Amino acid sequence: MFGSAYQHWQAALESEFFGPNAGGRTVLFHVDDGAAELIAEKYSLDVSLVEAVRSELRLDGNLPPYGKVAFGARQHNRLPVPQATAPPTLPLLAVTVLAASRMVSDENFRSNAYYPRLAEVLTGRHDHDAEQIVHRDFSDVAEMWRQLDRWLDTWDGARGTSTIIDHHRLVLIGYPLSQCLLRGYDRELIERMFSLVGYAPRSAADRMELLDATRKWAAHGRGFSHPLERAIADPRQHGLVGGLLQRLLAEWDGSVRERTGRRVGRLRLAADVDAGCLYWLAETPDEAAGGAVVDPRGGVYTFHASNYGPYAEWGREPRCDGSEIRSGLRLEGEVRQPPIVV
Image (cartoon, rainbow, N blue to C red; front, side):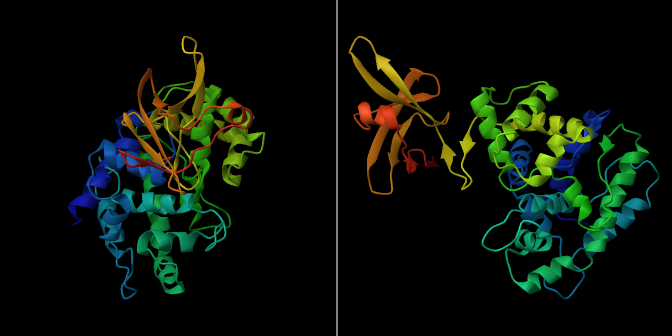
């Protein structure tokens, strides 16, 4: 019934969130852009989540946009209970959460604009017609969320305990919002915290330890979204937040990014006692054994592999003199060979 790309994403999402290993755990079906990329890499999925879902929808405005997926969901309901596999709606539901994760104020939308974000994800457009298309029959999608909640209940926790909840006011979009604790730039801010606190990439840590570190970090006004700040402050949600932080740490590759998506590497001051000089070391991606940073003014700063783990040595530039040591040094530009932006 569904194309191969959609089916592959269905299998990957079920394995990742609702497989047998989810038994006894509270499951948050949180999928943002970063999570979607990591799942695609982990399960060798060649087609993006958004493209796989788009291929199964009717987005021309003539037919119900979610009709095909809704039909598949009704067919699943006719199977004997408990159904062995999850309803065939997971990729579409994941996209509705991904859209919620992008709800941040910018030049186009306010932070509470859900349907415009969903239209942007599914159609690539910002216009009113696109918003009306994705809004049409969204009640079908809300029913898909309720169906997933019922399916999890039939397994009595063996495939994870549901966190899907009704919203007293947002009766349709409240379902994807309930799964989306991270909005906008929360992931980038949390990864910056991991780096500064000193957590190792792709490591494990106690969930309450991570929650405590995040709570202290948030107390200094780090710019977390309101949903995440509320969840951090709410003892009833600490288990969910702690579990999500554990997942983010296990997925984190050690990089830190700005809000623009550019990678941030730290500079460290080093001393050569024998030569009697100071020089800069730069944190680099694992794959960057050497290359050059080209700044917007055309300046070129070369670096090469060193014996200092993830840090590379610079060539004769940038200089290390008293003014730079006192005021700090920032290099901004594009890394060539390999093409990674810092």
